[in-house]
Length: 368
Image 1 (cartoon, rainbow, N blue to C red):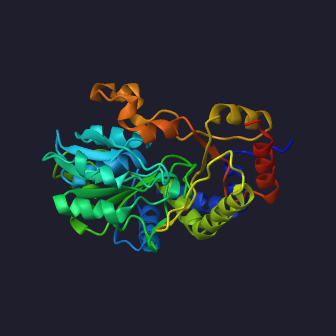
Image 2: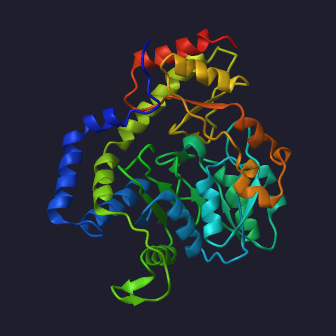
Image 3: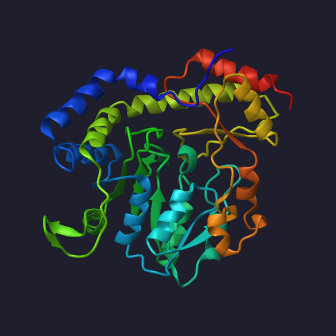
């Protein structure tokens, strides 16, 4: 039996240990814990890597969404449309910002927002659409933007799982009015604690977001409005700055693992493999297969030393947290169905050919 972790953060750390240790030591030596050079350096480096003008580091990806919504002028009672199969961070941030969550179903093939259903959800109260680039694959941004422009609605790209993903050759985060990123440790670009960022090409949105994330201040003790305390700390910024230099390489290695899975499982008809859409460069934060025997397969893989995940086992509209919206499971049939079939296989840049082959061999040995 071979042990295959779902993600191997220790292997990643050991591969860049000297760089990370030196960066952390520098922050400690300089006592640059909040704000300062390291945060500015990462913000500038990340902006350059995304080819975007403004980046604001914040405490986590959830805060990034609620702060971005504030910057867009969301007010209590405004409606925000998003997909029913995201992580709850997307929707709880809407509620935290004073908005009302409005769900739309996902596409079965891409797992992303079904743009053919968007217009039916728009009302005079609709303020923002949040497409989620789920699992590392961009949503259909052409259609999202076309509809948003038609109705004069803001677009916030939830890019938490999709750093360096591309839509028609251009990096995500550059299409909407504003975009948000998560640097949770398990993400493709992960800190060693919570961290996140907001990105935009609009200087006024950037200014509003930065002020709101830092107590609404315009100088140390001068506050234009009440904000929140959500700041990227110096240690996490320094770690992210180191990791950002390796991200292109790690992304291509993830894509190589996904390619091997597709090659080795392509003719195996008992599971459904993820589909990379023609317009997308998928960065495979997750490699998500589908089977009606999901739970049994997951247990079998665990028994054989293979860690997997389910992202996510309950569609958002079925959560107790959103019972007040009065939805039935069948209101969003694709999100409901997928939540019962999806299984995330191990995928990480350091994954070996031996590990990939073992996962594939074990899946094929399961009694479907």
